[in-house]
Image (cartoon, rainbow, N blue to C red):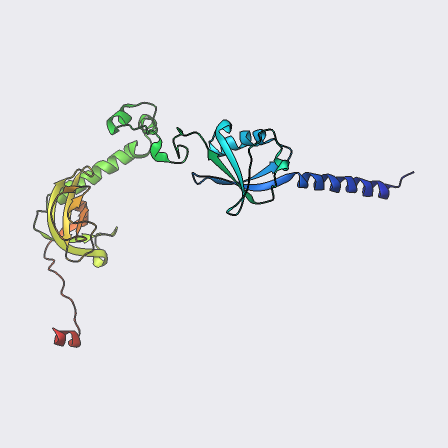
Length: 265
């Protein structure tokens, strides 16, 4: 009778031998192409080179019948895998060697799988999108959700009324204070400037106020997306909603200079 201990020893010996054989039949390589594809893959040495090419096709996008395979150790060329019937194990593969795939088809469009500029894009105008019934927007409109809810519509209408009322008190040339905070009574976030434009724009619907700041704290020179609404030095111009603008006696703030700086002037 064979003892349980000996049986377990025999079983684990077989298991270890099996794992060793399996490990010896597997090699890990880095697959590269001239189109900047790089992927780590495990190869079985029992595969034929033709089998290998078939498995590389979905990785590289190169058909197996136009693949040229070269094995590298770093930048040193080791071998060309030219015999489709040979086994992978017939070549001197070692872990983390580089397997480079070249497409020999001279008519293939390069980078067709990685260059998104080659992909024909589907474009839809705002009007066409608005008229479709199978969009997220159409779903929200039908179910009165989000900005299409009654509450949101009323808030938007009130926002437009407030802006129109504020715009009626503003005219080009007015000195103003632009409040960038949520609290219109808080002047700490205010920026002083002069109204240079008042009216509709092409970049967004509604009435907008073009401001020339006293300091270079703006975003533009009075133009947006190639359309000029007024002129001012770069970084002095901005556009805000009328409700953000308070007109009145807001003279340019004087710089506070030290005695030494005054003497230098």
